[in-house]
Amino acid sequence: MISLIVNPASGSGRAGAAIPDVRRELERRGIAHTIQVTSSLDHARALARTAQSAGQTAVAFGGDGLIGAIAGALRGTDGVLGVLPAGRGNDFARVLGVPLDPVAACEVLATGTPVRIDLGHADARTFVGVATCGVDSEATRIANQTRLIRGRQVYAYGGLRALATWKAVSFDLRIDGAPVTVRGHTVAVANSPMYGGGMRIAPDASLTDGQFDVVLISAGSRLGFMRHLPKLYSGAHTSLPFVRIIRARDVEVAADRPLTVYADGDPVAELPVSLRVEPSAVSVQVPAGSRLADRGIAA
Image (cartoon, rainbow, N blue to C red; front, side):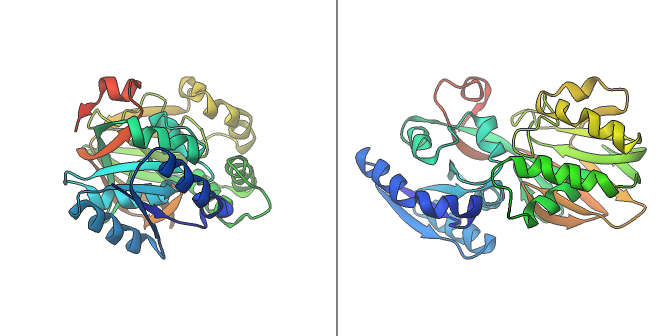
């Protein structure tokens, strides 16, 4: 039995429009299910806890923010998280290898393998992907407010808009207790490799290694940063001299001006913030035979 927890507004209404087709596919496969429409992330968390206590798979049917909220509700339990992607970026599904079409993704609900993955914490909020502050969090804010551009291209648009007026920030960090100071554009604390609709900000980050990849992008000209922006999609930016990556379990971030921390596409905290990774925190259904299924920790 699965409980589909749906944010019908995800992906500019993509999730709500896909409900009838998903329901027909689940019925064709003989998968018993209920459909629960969320009114907020707190409501989604409550629905996930109810599903877990009833022995049901809690399926996040929406964007990465919904996935992160439900993952947090299931952390430390024997509950299993399923994913039907219907947001704009769908980065978590990309990393898992789940088909980006929600009807096709029903195959993973039927035949997938549960694997335990790590979970990130930003103060009191949980996240599955990447927590960022700097020009990329400003880009996410712009993308979230944009209605004329649909799909994952909205994040590239947000990045260009943010860079047009961006000024470098002085970040003060403690990374596993060691002080690090960076003047630059971005601090990204990655539990997973991708954000922004397929940008590989931390290409070697793993959901199962019990560590963050902390990406520090130091100062340079806005024009130069803009010129290198396409490299984020391949991960080639990591070879640039102003990009540094440090592996850690605990990160504290402060800055010389107020900044909002975004994770899984949503605002989750204000600086200063404490971030920590919780190893093997939650089980998620992944495609059978996928690299994560082969290398992950069985649930």
